[in-house]
Length: 133
Image (cartoon, rainbow, N blue to C red; front, side, top):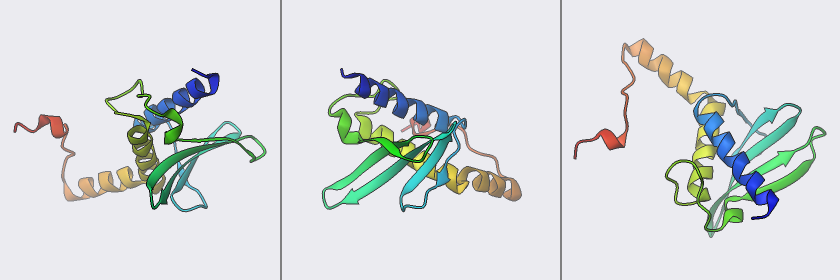
């Protein structure tokens, strides 16, 4: 496996993990369907590109001067499967990252948590796997 591909996999999987556990903060970028995060003096964007053929999720890496130095999409990984979760390929993982980055950038979790508190309701723990049928 080329070195860059291994680096791309580590970057996507690491960003996904950090975002889901709340270690990574995202903002809405100036371009539609794009969210950005800072890592030191560098920036990473995740964006969804929609066309007649479907949608692709892209990662764009910027250096400290704001120059795009690398970009790749879910298609870069071909049939490779992520080493995290139960994703059948990189598109579902990167789509999950894109969605989580968007929720983070919009502050959705905080707003919903505040609404639950205001309504005197508690978050229901568990997921679809807990449904007994």
